[in-house]
Image 1: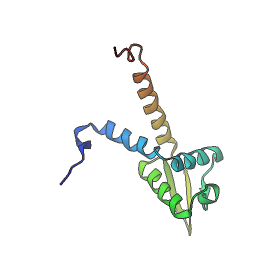
Image 2: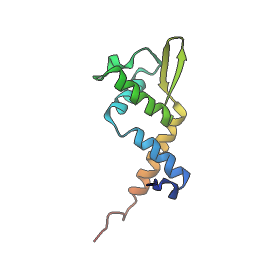
Image 3: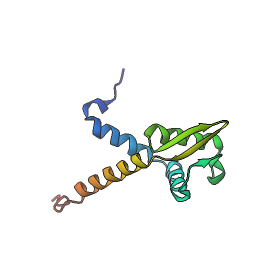
Image 4: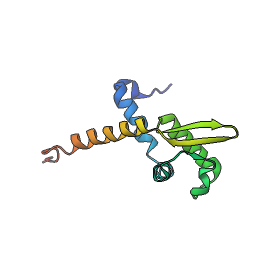
Length: 111
């Protein structure tokens, strides 16, 4: 049976990869943009705001929730969705660390 090589890397790299993978689809980015722009928790159907079916949007919401980037709280028959501010800050810090590392002077002298 084939095994994943993720166990060869430390937990920080694995958790970073999960977050970055959650961003690897334009629909999920659109959902994050929408939630960030509204600046409130959304109750109701986010699919009304996107050019995708409700089922597809729900699948993407599940991925974002599993990555911890959004929170979804059941309120009766509805779910309230909002960004998880702590996880979003963590994501920003991880991006900044990676960018700073990649952008070090001399990293592009492959001759």
